[in-house]
Image (cartoon, rainbow, N blue to C red):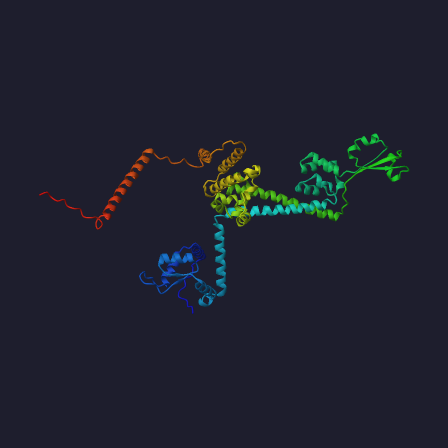
Length: 500
């Protein structure tokens, strides 16, 4: 059914990679042209060719047909024939072994993939997309793990939850304190270093103390000494004589009716193996929190390189989420401002269109501080204005040759002025004036060159020449119309009769 007409092997792996790149882009290479010239009959323009070339790609087939005039076919039949030829290639080529074909195919596939990744235009955006995705995952995991640490350690020291609200500080204190009985005044500077608050550190220390006092009613001066301050009185137990020796130490043996005053943690005792596991879990939470901080710094530096104006306008996390949702900075720069405004709220938009309800006013840009600071009646207007500025910043970042964050800073100032305009009525600066200021600053720094000035004389001469050429064309057009209207349609003029 199928016979081998011609075969042209590649001389090297570099040549094979070059040809596969040309085929993927729909370009006909010189090697492909030579192969077609040698093995395909010459096509005649006047007559329809009896032969057709089967190709697997429509784009490549149209390119071959335009350049050589060879009729190309791309359909299900050609795809099936090409698949059969690829499957039985070892039988068609007697010199080629089965293993050699597989190895060559695998090596070429690896080289092609490596080349595509290396020269990918959006390769810098992909790091931002992965970073913001990992940050979102880390936030969920750290919150879940920290809640488990707080719940687990609260069996032993429940008062610490009310004193320390931050998860990272709580995990560090768990790792530092261990058993609550080990807390003393010597550890106060270390606790203050973790909590960064002297009052909070003292509260942590006080929550773990135990006070016992015996006093004769009314409360004797012994309860007012620094050893037993009145602020530590919590439980009052009245005992009548005779008093048990357990409740009457030698120091207070002369007191018969007394008050027993106690304050201590409500938590239960904990075994050593349980404490080891709690500490290991707290250490894992601390490492995850520290890694999150380092990843946030990496995202900040990466956004400053890839999209500095978007970063200066709307921040790292919101800008990275916009790029991630669009797929790349190039895709985001192609979106109109109306699409950027509701990016991330697609479900709400289609639900509103289906039910004929109110469409959403904002999507991912809702997390920006500008939306939160605006009044309820102005949230829609400021989101529309902010989306417009985000669209401008993305296009500057994507298409500018010299990256700078000054455009984004000016756009940020414009949004601030717009907020003040909604609140107080103060007129904001026009966008043209703001961009002119940035251009003047960049020219002063030497980042961009001066614009080319055109002489007024040259402009006047060009205008005159253009006007003269237009007038000549109009005159020629009128003459041609008169000639075309004349001839058959033109009636012959009547001759005047001469007087006798």
